[in-house]
Image 1 (tube, rainbow, N blue to C red):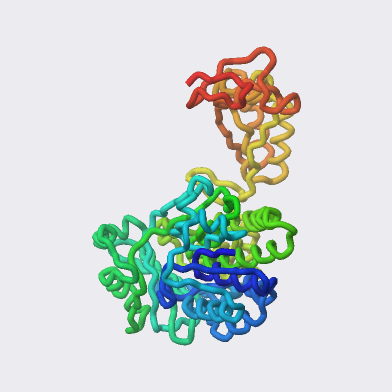
Image 2 (cartoon, rainbow, N blue to C red):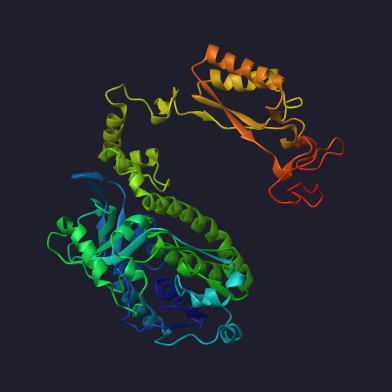
Length: 532
C-alpha cells in the first residue's frame, strides 16, 4: 500500500492496516518536513474516541494522556455568559497527535518519506495494490484525477484565521464581539495544559470594512502569518485574552473550502479524509472524519475477500456518514456566514440558536444534554405563560398569526377535474384543519391549464376554481382556528403526463397540451420537447 500524506488520516491508516496484518508492505510520502506541523488543536467527540480505543487500545492510551477534556459550551454575548453542558469533547495538539502516530508507525516498521514528493501517480498505481490519497484539502492526488473523482470545490464567503493562545480556557467558547465593522466571532477551546485554539471568523462585508483586504492580494511563504490580521484579532478580543498573546502558525485570512467528490475511488486509487471531503471547522469534525475514514478502510480491507470488494464496502459504509456530517457542517457554516441576522436576538435566544444551528443538536437532543439550560430557554420563550412544547406555541408571520407551528405540507392528490377541486379536497384538507394543524397548505395549484402536470392537478385559472377554493376556505375558517396556504406552481417540462397510478411521468396517450419550460429539453426521452 502507498499512502500519500502523513497527516492524521494517512498515518492512522498505516498503523491500523499493519496492526490487522503485519505482512502488508506500506510506504508513506509527505512533502513537508517532519516538524512542519501547521495548526494547533484537533477535536474528537466521545463517540469517535470509543471507536479509536476499540481499534487500537495502545494508541488510545497514549493519546488520552494528553487530552484536554470539556463538557460545557460557553456563549459569550452582550456581556453575558450562557453555558450549556453535556457536549462531551476532547482535544489534543495536532503536533502531539502526529508524534504519537509517527512513533506507532516506527513500532510497526512503516517507512515514511518526509520532504519527498510521492512518485508519479501512474507509477504508484502499477507498483502497489492500493494507493491512498490522504494529502488534505489541497490534495494533489485529487487534482491529478479531478475529472475521475468529479471534485466540487465550494469556497465559502466568510473569512477566518486559525490562531493559538497560551490562555487555557475551561470550556469550549464562542465569543461574539460587536464592532464598528460588524460582528466578529471566535471559536476557542483548550487542547493542552498550556495552549488553546483560537479561531477568528467574520462575514465577508465585515472583513472588507475592517481594512484587511490587502492581505488576500499578497503571496505568503509557507508557515508565514499575517501579523496585521493577528493584531486586529488581538485588539477585538483584548478583554477575552486577558493580556495573553495570539500565536500564529501559517495563520492568515482564508476562506473555508467545502470539498465534495462524486466518487472517492479511481481504480486502485482512493481518497480519504480532507482529500475526499471537508466539513466546516465550526462542528469540529475534520480530524474526526479523517481518522474514522482510516478506521473504516482498514476494517474493510481486512474483512473483505478482494480489494475491489473492500473499496466498494468502504464507500458504501462511509459515504452516508460523511454526507450527513457535511449537511450539518453546511448548515453551521451558513449560520456563521450570516451571523449578523441573529445578533439582534436576546442573549438566551441567540445562544439557543447558535447551539442548534447545525440541526444535529435539536431542541429535544439539547434537552437530554442539559435540561436546566433548555428549561431556562423555555421560561424565557413562554414569557410567563403556562409552559407548552414549542411546536404548540403560536407564531406570527407579519400579519398572519398561527395558533401553533404544525404545518400540513403540500401533497398532490391528482383528484381535481380540469383544475377544479371538489368534495375529496374538502374532506382531505378540512380534516387536517379539524385535526389541529395551525397551517394547512394546499397541493400545488397550477396557474394555467397548460401548467398542469396531469389532468388531475388542481388549478386556479377559471372562475369555478375560485368558488371551489372559497368553499374550502370558508369551511376551515368557520370550524377551526387553522389558516389555509396555497402553493402555486407550473409543471415546466414535466407536464401533460398520466396520473401517477396510470404511469408515473409518462406522456398522455391522447389529449396532450403544449408545454413551456426554461429550456427545450424533454423531461424523459419519450416526453415532448417543450417550447422555451
